[in-house]
Amino acid sequence: MKKTEKLIGAGVGLAAITAAGAYFLYGAKNAKNRERVFGWALKMKGEVLEKIESMKTIDRETYLRMVDKISERYARKEMISGAELQHLTVELKNAWAHIDKKLK
Image 1: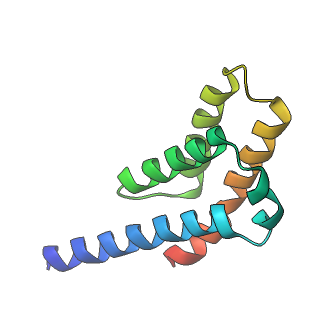
Image 2: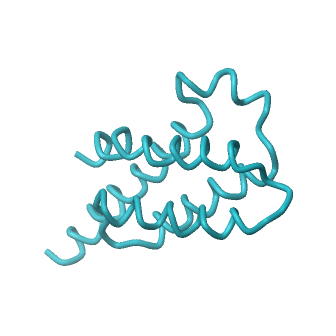
């Protein structure tokens, strides 16, 4: 039974990662933004996806805290404007609704 539970957990985790990646890059609102994707934005999204992948369980509060911590690190970089970072942070936080749907 434990092996089955692990396989189910891995499948759910993989589904969440896939859903998050697809939403971040190909979501309806992102059609315009794909043209302006900066290297740091992709790197930040990648870090969020890596963190999701490494978690055994994830809930909304944990996800939002994780996005805030990653966002704080990027805020210290001089090449990133505050408006762009704020926009991406809001986008990442709003992605939780989509990720949660895929988890259920």
